Image (cartoon, rainbow, N blue to C red; front, side):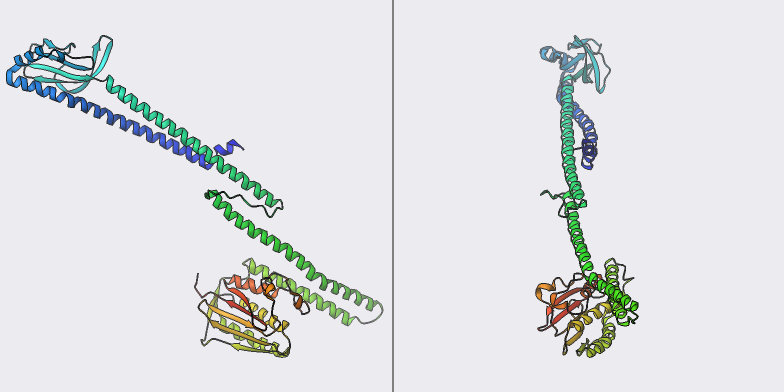
Length: 453
């Protein structure tokens, strides 16, 4: 696996960006937390000092500076420690309590560097004027700073661990995605190499890559079907075109022989022309189906009045049916118009193919019924006959190009009529169903209503 592709993967990049955002958030949190912790600790120092200051103010109020001095003399423990500081000077400025020699003007709370035996130490202190005496009270910052350092170190450790975890998770995720993409690429290369059964792997995690793989597999399934249909159509075209082409060639050779013998080859030429005309019809049908399937056969959909189309086609095929010893009846709805969106020429061609099939495969006395009605699903065209029908085993295949049942091979045709019907129906969003007419066949085409999605 190419690690460069893993590190350049989208999942890894997103994780790196998320880690940077996390680092920024942690720095901002550390600054805010440090400030808050420092303020809280200073507040606690002030809270601990407030009762002491208040006590000495009460002592001074009751007995003056002498009472304060006396209390200090009795309370030797208040002289101060290395962590806590208490220094008192009298009105003359002489120090009367405390081990620290501090001479500071009165003011609020402040941070001061105090000389110690080991050098200097930072204290947070306040100078309070109590009567004629000056009291300095505060605490060393070293314990507070240790808490702040522990806080900062804890945040740094947590931030570092989370950052490493994020990066590791991003790497593993990107690596997993990269493996899926490589397997997808292998499957696509295999499909391109001719293995039409190759499909993209789909994991049970059903993530975005898996859903893309499922969509691509559906497209590969469709492409495989189309390739199979193309190969089948190519074989069928070769089979169906070989016979008329061979007959046309034989007819032309026979005509040449007759011409060389001094005879007029009229009949032979007419037979060859007939075969070539059939070939031309087959190619025209193939082109029409291809244009319809490629969405090139219909311009902007327009209103099509099915009543008008059905009436026009019926006038023509009633005559065709009568000439073939058959009869056709027409049934129209009790409405003047029944409109759909589409292409009138395509719909007329589809209807003509259905009627031509009924006439071609019917025998003397065949009864053909052409009906149009409005149903709950939409306008429905139906062509029914009392001919030989289509076996149920073949009904699913009759829409395939060039398919012809064995019983239909004795009649004229090329197996493209119902293929064109299906293409036109699909182009209009219509559904085509076949059913037994007992006897005969019933073909029903249901169109969507105008304006329906």
